[in-house]
Amino acid sequence: MFKKFFKFLYGYVIIEICGKGAERFLNICLRRGIPVWDAVPTENGVRASVARRDFKLLREVSRKCRVQTKIREKHGFLHMVRLYRHRKALLAAVIVCAALCVLSTRFIWLVEINGVENSDIAGITETLEKMGVRSGVLKSRIPDGMDLKRAIISDNEHIAWAWVYIEGAKARVEIYEQIIPPVIIDKDKPCDIVAACDGSITRMIVKNGAEILSEGDVVSAGEVIVSGKVPTYKEGQNEEYIYVHSMAEVNAYTSHKRTDDYKLYYESRTPTGKRRKRRSIEIFGKLYTLPMRNVPYENYDVSEKRSELHIPFFGYSGIALDTVSYDEVTVNQEPISVETAVEFAKNDLEEKIAKELTTGSRLQNENIEYVQTDNETISVTLEMNFIENIAVEQPLDGNG
Image (cartoon, rainbow, N blue to C red; front, side, top):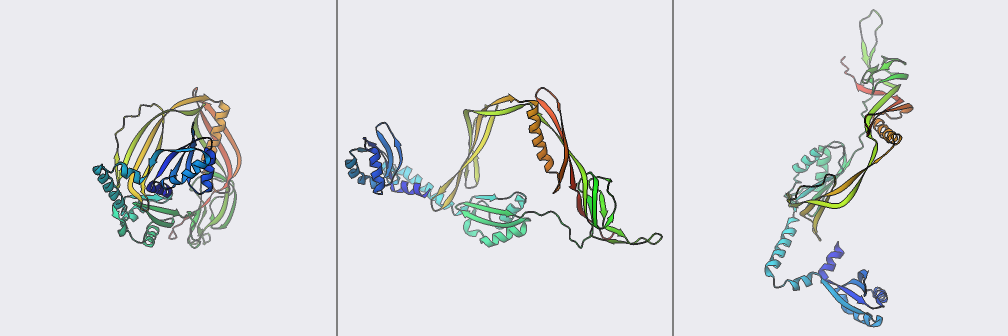
């Protein structure tokens, strides 16, 4: 970006090198340290760009290579000033716009939050606003980075690290979340062992607590398997209990079933080349949507692009262009066999069932069935059976 800025500031020309020695001309320029870029072959030779101040150095090289160099275009700040020096109103407008853009970088117009997946983004936004990080605030009024970091971490759970980067008129908030561990109850607190899901108990190892169920029993999700309420009285005596932290490993034969509908064709989308765009301009935190005719396409894909205006040495200016593109597509449906559709369905349903399993589950067997509901659709049911540890700790009220 800075290279382009300085090229524009100092000015450059696009030249055409005519003659058979064009390639030799470029090689000599590079050996002598004369920057030449964007070289493109043409019918008469080569077209390339060179800095305005280096153009006079090309004369000796041109004579040596017996080529002609002609200026085709001029670019740069000085060239623009000479071109528009008599249009004072335009020059004044450019100066005012540039001054406004530079002035706008003293304010924050956009707050961007990255890295949030499990945390409450509304809570983070509320913390930032409380600390003064919001659209339209002067950058000089924003608190120190360490203060912002402490506020974000203390006010919001599961955040391990945070920092606010000021980039021109943008405040970029980077969040790193903690890896949330499974809920583990303190060993000194009483708890029951309950079933994580339905199943048939195949093996139990009870380390602490009173057994409620035994091997071979059928259990439902949430049902108590081992109780933390342990009786300490003998038959005929008054009931007395102690409350303990139950510990057990309970393996059970479990069954997981999922059903879904799948099509007997593969759908491909081919762009036709036709496109409609909806543009919105963001100016200092305010979004203005430009008018656009309705999208006339029956089938289309949607894509979004954001272009921000950055000022060298200052950063984001507070002005951005958001473009939503609607690209027309032709939808083609290619028939596939029932076997292929069932194989695709099996992979999809296995992925969904995997999200329901506990750690260390072992697959025992599986069964897949399908029914064709119409000419284009089949209903697929996958049942998978596992041996898994279904023991889950559940807090127990020690008062009975």
